[in-house]
Length: 148
Image 1 (cartoon, rainbow, N blue to C red):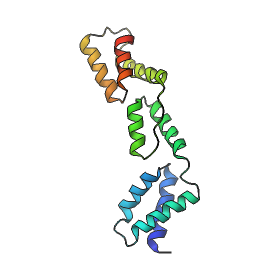
Image 2 (cartoon, one colour):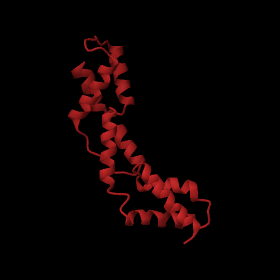
Image 3 (cartoon, rainbow, N blue to C red):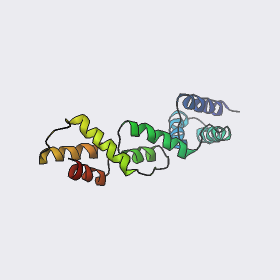
Image 4 (cartoon, rainbow, N blue to C red):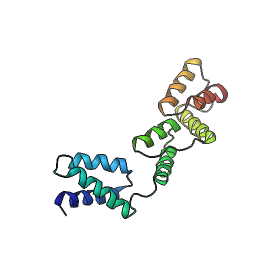
């Protein structure tokens, strides 16, 4: 076995020991390290298949749901979460409108007092804030027109 193939397998083990990675993430990180080496592409493919054989990559939908749970706890909106997952090469998750509404209200209440009187300008600020946090337009509209 060539040194490049061994190094690629070792690098995958290091990466997966620190946290879960999707196959797309592993490929891009390995490409940065081994693209210039002779037989680099072959070594990357072999290392990925080695990790799949050992079942180190796991189910992409499980990985996506764990990442989504972490982002939900950080009060990120569904648009942000699904965009993040697609960047990682993972499947998107379904939206739960009640959870989205709860997270959006948490974001707003962290920014404003509970008995704050919202003006039109404040409602526009809230809309921009929620949009920047990745909430979909329906949730933003419901928060502004129904909850505030």
